[in-house]
Length: 134
Image (cartoon, rainbow, N blue to C red; front, side, top):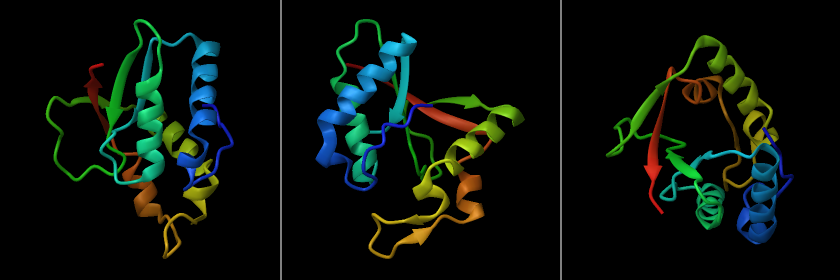
């Protein structure tokens, strides 16, 4: 996991830095696959990340999109990946490593802290992905 140290809730103000950071991170690992939030996500930061990933010009880069807050129904064309207990624990640790996820969320007018139940929802047994065609 690579943190780009960009502003939470205002990522759209740093789109070029986000694109540059993503390209640099991918360059270090030589990845042929990237998963990013769905472009239709309600959160502006998630949509910005989706746009940055769509703008990447890398041959043979496979792109997957995932719903951050799934509505309970599986998107058309979705594939499910079942996580092991170890993978779920690693994901829970990753979610908790984000200051805004473990503490107060400042980009929401009501400013809330995610509950254990909400964090548990992010560490469910399966993940949904949809292949993004360019």
